[in-house]
Amino acid sequence: MKILLLGATGLVGSELLKLLEQDSGISKIYAPTRRPLPPSEKLVNPVADDLCATMATWTTPIDIAFCCLGTTRKDAGSDAAFRYVDYTLVVECGSVALKNGCQHYSVVSALGANPQSTFLYSRTKGEMEKALELQAWQHLTIVRPSMLQGDRPKPRLLEQISEPIFKLLPEKWKAVEASAVAMAMLKSARNPAPYRLQIIESEQIQKYSQ
Image (tube, rainbow, N blue to C red):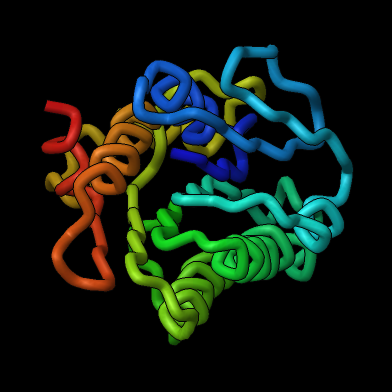
């Protein structure tokens, strides 16, 4: 099985890469990134600053694509730059994967994704989901985690402050480990739902890691 992994250097993507490398049913992992990944037997790692340019010339057949791309308005620097990562890249890379034979697209979205939201983050995630639903996927899996926990190179201050609070909230709002999100993505791709669109809400993620 040939896999496309987008966002392999991120919190969820790096955890998913570990799982994919350990999976005997996977022969190749194509993971385009801006900075090099540690080499491995299965990994093909095109390195370029412009992911859209890399994907625009893509002709390699793909079975399953995983998208863990995502940023924040603060990290991106502007509304437009944030939307480019969380909407444009996700949708356009999905379109390329689809043209190269991909049957299943599994994407990290977010709790509260809503195209009608007044908040940029939630609205962008919701619009991204709707755009993907319009593409001709045989299987589309959307994972909506709450706040993510894990080892970040640059811990986000707001997440550090809010983490103790999230632990006291109802299950739906509790923070989830990035490794659990990665496991949910892999297991749901290995055993896809018997319908086209599967949405995995934050409170459902943990059951996949049990």
